[in-house]
Length: 209
Image 1: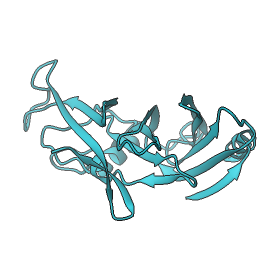
Image 2 (image 1 turned 90 degrees about the horizontal axis):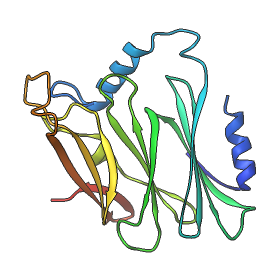
Image 3 (image 1 turned 30 degrees about the horizontal axis):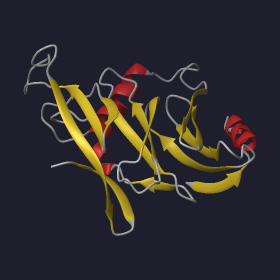
Image 4 (image 1 turned 90 degrees about the vertical axis):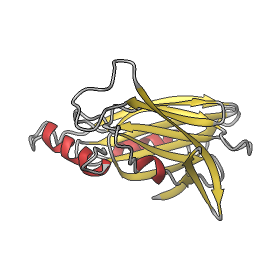
């Protein structure tokens, strides 16, 4: 991970140059298994592709880009001001997991510095969710989202959705009985609320109890 201060246009040029938990497996293992099964090693698998999301929040202009192939991607975040389009703070997260699905922006802890949450889904049948979170300080800082990435619910088998509600980040997923191949009912959902907490020098996204 590195930080830099570049023009927003310059940041995008830099990006252009970048050529699961089941009851028996943790989410990282299941997502890797899904990806391997879905993407056998072929020339098409190794072909680079990118996803981009542009959004804004208050006076901030925000661009999120993922670049890479089915085995390795980098996530690039650039934050600029609506008042000054010539400069932007940037951060690169190397080797991110999954496909970029959405960018959520909120100020969950109410400190006046919004956060950016990049939601990802693994590319196999499980569609296991993963987050990358950043608070918009100078420099941008990374949020510890390990509590989101280590789901231990027996009913959880992926198919995640994430959204913001009030001061919480909300995760929903189909709920399964142990050993069952289908969710309890078509509209049965597991729901977990996460809040943003400061622990010593680290910002953490933690389940709300």
